[in-house]
Image 1 (cartoon, rainbow, N blue to C red):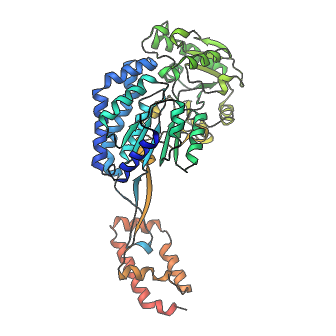
Image 2: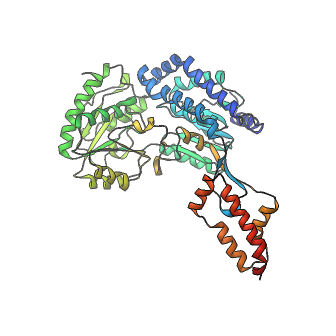
Image 3: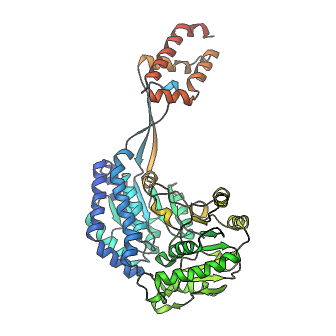
Length: 498
């Protein structure tokens, strides 16, 4: 495998040649990726089964659907995304053109995660391609089968002078981060995110950090508890809890807890049978290390449901803990497994205070039929996203940004937001060199006079109603106003020179 410096140099030369900038080239690469998903679907699902024992249904739902839907969306909209975005102007610039141009950053590094190895590595890749960048992809070494398959397949479908896969573990990633990139996109845990951010700071490289945290789930007594339990258990057990936006703990009263435990037991049995270990729909923990970490968390609080485990199969049963203490590791560390502790509170205000006493979460879930309660949480907490009366499903709306805040991350992506993340928004003012344009701006030149100051105050003052008229009249009104200003300056300006 080439050294990082060689790979970066190759990509830098390709980017500087302008190869990735034409929209037609970007479309071709996205179409090739889509072809890869269609042609190599079985191999991708086999790798996911090897790494995480994901069923075909879950692999399609949580990995391939996101990727194919995103590519189709990008191909449909990329022509409009790449067009200059013209902005409103003041009267001083009425004859000029002002717009925002989306420029690719250049050479981008994307470091993926193991829990959704294809989605969380290739979804940002697709945004970087659509924006016109060259990319080095670093899959997670923890999901070995998926990383190996990406390293094998991507060079067969993408231009190898513009997109490369760098496989390896912590030493290889450390070497990679010594190189200068124009943008870094990382998905993973907060501790490593801090290291990525520190490495990026050496070159003042912009970053997106998609991290995690403890996503709370509040339930009040106004909901249909059976429906709520199904949606919460599904979100918690998706990828056996190894999901950054999985509900991490529940906040509810003792009365709601009793109802939830009964409904959750029924939901688990409905989804996975009387013995969840035998279900083909429940994945496994990624590694022995993570399995042992989760088994330690089971020792805190009281097991109300589940609790079974099998080290030889890396199996942890869907488990609900009650009577946990607020300083227990299960309430202070991100769980990332099928363990769901319940914290008892008396009301929504106490729940909000509890949430605000910790780091800002990636997601917040509120189960309530009371709009006033829902509004309390939306308006008085800070989180990457809020989903009301469901879990995880906010990720499926690609017109919503996905990302964290504070320790749960910075920046966002999905849909158009991916394109924007990997694009620099360049401001462009295209001035008119004609006599009329020069006359309109002549008041800026010395010597300064009171009239010139008043003139520019008028010309630069924002008037939304006037700007709206200019836009609706396709700039005819703006031209008229500019001509009128020119006439007034020519006729009366000489009386206000001193």
